Length: 116
Image 1 (cartoon, rainbow, N blue to C red):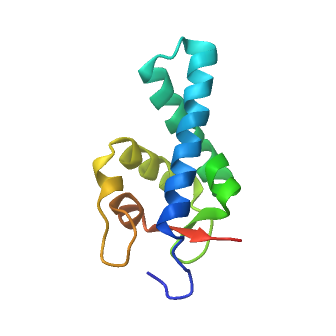
Image 2: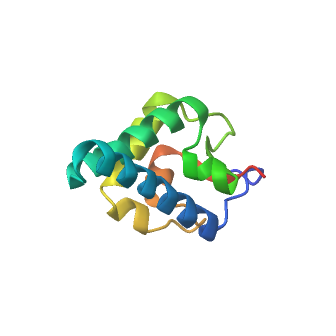
């Protein structure tokens, strides 16, 4: 990973994930009778659309972090799609590579960085 892009602290990343999941749950409860597949689908759709376009989810922006390529650019739709699929599989998101990034970020050559 590039030394110029600091990795966001684990606590912020975890809080952002919980916020994003709770938003997906709220949408699922309101529109889909709290269907578990609808919750996962909303979570995935939010991640793909928001990370692919503006570089972060609702939770990311609340806690002051963002997703970037390791060169500092926005991830774009392809990286966002791959990252979202791997995140929803859970296992790649649990384990980390030596530099502290989760496997879904390492495989997509992205990182979650602190922006404020």
